[in-house]
Length: 167
Image 1 (cartoon, rainbow, N blue to C red):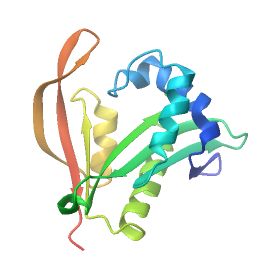
Image 2 (cartoon, helix red, strand yellow):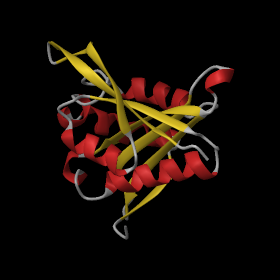
Image 3 (cartoon, rainbow, N blue to C red):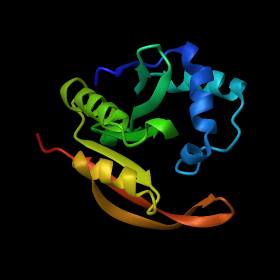
Image 4 (cartoon, one colour):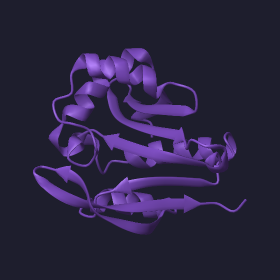
């Protein structure tokens, strides 16, 4: 953990987030579109930092963004105990603990500061590394959405995973 640290995302992170999300290994495993513009991320970061949204980044000692994690409360009074989660890690930092550090920080925020009981996410079935990370943190597969999203010219299924705490 000494090679990097977790902090809250800031407006100035837009160029680094654009670069992260432009990487082919990242975009193919998200619902983002390829080739994002800087203006898109400048607008998007403002939305992501809105009420009920929590955005964390992992940076190295020089301040370079290595990964991003987002947690957002579900809308509606009857779902306010839950949140969605998304995570992305730079290709060269995948498998080096950045994802685990972001997950630990986001789940600490969810459990100990927001009182959330349910965290849910979607993941492509071929993303074995992400599925393993989510399972490591207590997520279980709840459903499979068939032909859920278009990716690289084909319709792909999405696994819905969730972590439910009964505290």
